[in-house]
Length: 105
Image (cartoon, rainbow, N blue to C red; front, side, top):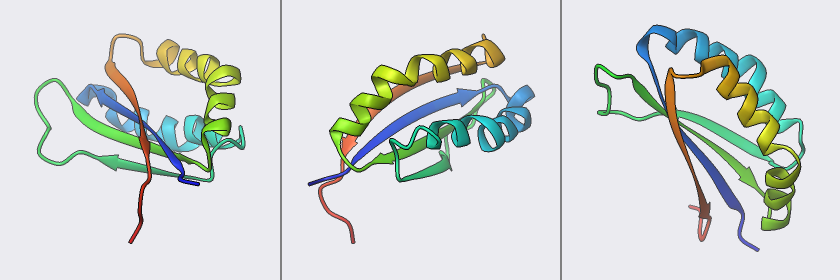
């Protein structure tokens, strides 16, 4: 069965970039991984998309299957997204997408 990538793309204002990265690495990503719905994660910065509005990052969490992703979305996502919103309100834009892993090399 193919795994599922839960991708969160975030454009964060320059003024809070370091604070956001620290919080993601020390708080948010560990909290997401503690749900046990994902087996790995990856935090990346998009190259070539920097502008005066901010820097864009993508966080990809790999779920072994759709069932665990659904559990995450039903039981955990709302509270974790609210914590992010509360801490960085008005300083970022984000969107989420799902990708099915078809093949790895």
